[in-house]
Image 1 (cartoon, rainbow, N blue to C red):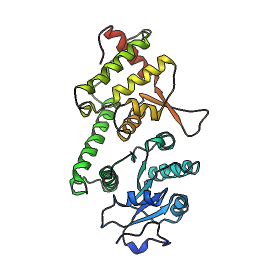
Image 2: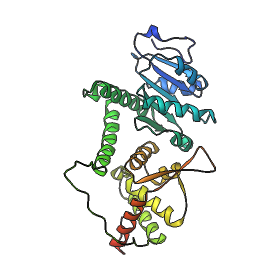
Image 3: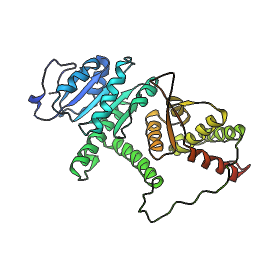
Image 4: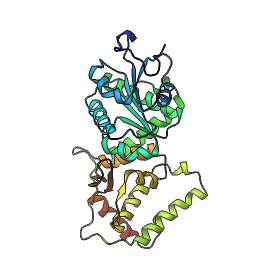
Length: 306
């Protein structure tokens, strides 16, 4: 039987297998996370304020789940830094679930690509994210592929896995290694042409109009929308926080965050710390991406570049 919400036991050895360690900002948040854990998997839930001390004495954990329903304040920064470091060290898998309003402070601290970020996730999203995180960790540790359809919520998990695989494929295409047989095309030389703000806005508006006539899921990959939004901000000399870029992506925030991380990893986006707010980062086009976008608009001319 699973442990109760906020148990007082000092150790977890009696479980026999590593449990899921849940840290939550409230008892209701802890229950939301606990409901995503299958009945045969032990878990232990603690208040978020006890997490760092718990990690200091925790022997092992199958995964760490941070469930937030509000911002606990500056203490969250240290917790996120610790989670990012622990996942990077291979200690456990991690899932962070939070409302849309917390996108900026979370993204500012979390960098490791294997941490699953869920923004306003459904119960099915939670179950799938936990299963995917544990599946990734098992495969990384064993080197043996496993059938993800054996996990709970298999249909949602397959959908989530397909999404992650699609992003990974984009990453592979954009980051051609030194030994790859295919060479990247050489960019044009000379100064990149200027682009009018009005032209970019017209393109963005035209893309938004597609949703009037087709299901938005047909256009679920937001990379181009984010490139357009960042180019618009660059031309207008505005800064774009992560939360605003998620909105511009026109996809669920969880999906947008995965793409932002991917585009940053391949060098198309750059993170820029907000000098006035340590819990926020801005996203901007890398110089090479900016030049490529400007040359693209210069080449298509007055054509509608949707």
